[in-house]
Every structure is written in C-alpha cells, then in structure tokens.
Image 1 (cartoon, rainbow over the protein chains, first blue to last red):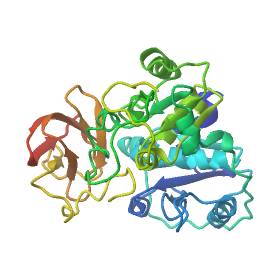
Image 2 (spheres, each protein chain N blue to C red; image 1 turned 90 degrees about the vertical axis):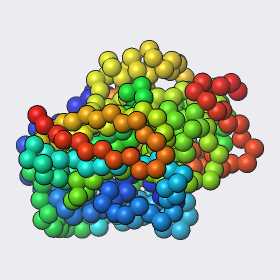
Image 3 (tube, each protein chain N blue to C red; image 1 turned 90 degrees about the horizontal axis):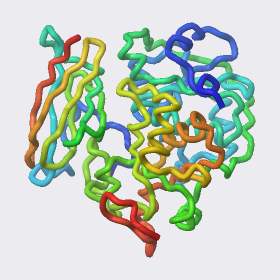
Length: 283
Length: 103
C-alpha cells in the first residue's frame, strides 16, 4: 500500500473540503475541541461516547457502528478522511475501527488537528448537518484485533511491540506523564515485547515519518523480525493504533494486530508473566 | 482514574485526588512575543535523554501541566506564533516554568 492511499496532506485536505463523496471526520477524546473549532464540513465522533459500548468493556459492535455512521451521514462508498488531536491517536484508533468493519476507502489527515493548527489553517464552529444514510458495516475482521490469550501465546513467538513511553515500559510509571499516576494494576511490560514508543513514528508536528525512517526504527533499531506476525499494544489501545497504522498501512506488513485490551487488561490479569526494567526479558 | 490517554483540561484546578506531597507536577504557561498567554499551544515533555514523554494543549489561560518524577526534563512548546524550549530540574511538588514562544 502506498503512503498516498492511506494518508492525505493538509494541502490535499484544504483543496478537497467541498469534494462530493469526501467526508471529513474529527475524532477526539475531548469533544470541546471540535465544538470550539473544526475543519469546515467535518462531522464529529467522540472517542468514548460513540465508539465504546456503554456497559461492557468493549467497543461498539457491527450494528452499533452501522448506526453511528448512518447517523453521521457517512455512506459505504464515501472517502472518509479522519483527523484529531493527540497526534492523531484517536483518529488512528477510529481508522482501525473503519478497517475492522470493512470500510473500503478511509484515510488519515497527516499531522491531524495539530499540523492544521500550527499551519494556522481555518477552523469553524459552524454546526454540520449531513443527511442520515443507511450504512452497513461488515462483520468484524479478527485479522486486525488481538485478544488476551493470543497475546500471552505470542510471548517469544511473535513480535510484540510496546508503544508506551520508556518509563511505562520499564514499570517506573503506570500512565503517561500528563495523567495522575493512581492506577492500581501491576507495572511493567509483556515479556519479550520490544519498546518502540509511538512518538518515534511521528515528527514533532504530528506527521508520520517517512517509510525509510520507519523501517529503520522498527527493524534496524528495535529488531522487529520481518518474517513474523506482530501485535502492538499500549495502555488502552489508541497509541498502539497509531503504531499499527505505521506498521500495516505505511510499511505494508500483512499480519499486524492491535491489542486494544492493552496494559490496562494485561497488567490486571492474574498469573500472567510480566517483565520489569528496560530490557524485553525472556519467555 | 482517567480511563483514556488523552490530555485532561489544562485550565482545570488540580483534581482533589492528586496528592501534591507525593506527585511531581511540572506546570506553567506559554506566552507569545507580546507577553500574551497562548491558547492552543502544544507543549511536549521530553525526558533526560531528550525522549518524548507526553504532550498537552494549552487552554484559555495558556496553561500546561504534567505529572512526572523528580529529575531533569525538557519542555518544548509549538504554536502558530513560534516555538520555545525550557529545561527544568524538577523536585517533588509544583515546578513552574514560563515558555516564551518566538519564530
């Protein structure tokens, strides 16, 4: 897959704001960001309210996803361009959903909201109303999603990529540094997981690094085995969606899964192995 | 406990659950060349080896806040008015820094 098939530049986006069949979608955790200002014509998807099951710890199912996109006025044959804050973490997370549920044409806006704002491009608070559609999601594609038993079985067998910060990996912190550190589950990482913080895949302005730089990062520096399957994880599965995007969509590795249970699940499981410190550890 | 990895509202008061005696908090404001508070600046926290740790966006008061650990940290602000870099030797409690961005 070529970079231009999965990423659009801010210039391309600006030229295609009114192109029929192209729908811009802002995906944020902080819904007020969208309300304060968004790209003209973009609809909003809330990371939590729209994409998570309200009761169980799981994300929306096929029917719920169909209903969400129908309400937002998105059709199966639309080109969906996703962008958001936090260096596109949540946009990449939504991108993964669109792929899980079989949407054909979905892209990320390279650099997301951050690059757009740093470029001082226009945003608007205008309310966007699209006509409802009858979106039909495909059954969930399990080739892209890892569950906990599969992750434990992958220790020492597949590439495991831990994309959290080095301090979270080593067990010195339980959450990213902008959040209070009060979580109670165990710290550390899954044994044999390679540490490649998600941020290494991005430039300072939030755009993805070049494919050559990414390959050097994962294969050259971290030691990813290109002959093996890969599972990426973080704390709750959105930073790892960003890395999943880099590995599968930009570098073209075929068998790459995102483990959305991630450390908040694995670090709470009874009896599973955990490694502490800066080294991957052994099986 | 916050169940996401995204940045909480940077202008909000410290949550009551945060024990300032135990936490190491790096906080401060971003200002532009005219000395005005900059809303919507991206502030990145880099660790002692220059490695990215976290990023937040400043709110109306131009404020940022990180929960870290005692030690040497670098703060890097990006905005439409320009960039700024600040070094902090953080101790337990509140550590305040002002970042003045320029082209």
